[in-house]
Image (cartoon, rainbow, N blue to C red):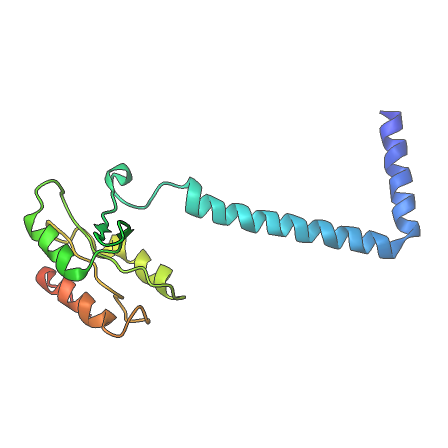
Length: 151
């Protein structure tokens, strides 16, 4: 224990002799700790926490198979409506468009609030119209109309 206190006193004396290096070391440590905390917060929120849906293990994603190229891709709204009307294997179906924009996460986070209003559900385009596409609000209003939801 005596050696530990001796080492701590020596470390403090060395740091006091070079205040510039000490400031850089403290700044580097604080930036590193802050970045590490921020990254863990993102990983925790996105990857580690369960989805904010009832029975998230039952959620599936459906895609269209394009015959010409053999690739999978997004589902068109008419295809979705056909699947929705004819489906017997699903409790509920939702349609979304995942265009890249800054407002997408905020609009999509509202899905949990508007889903499950009555039986089968729809979610089309941008619920608030923050730029997914030009008819985002209209498609959302059409999808919400059967449930009595208005903006």
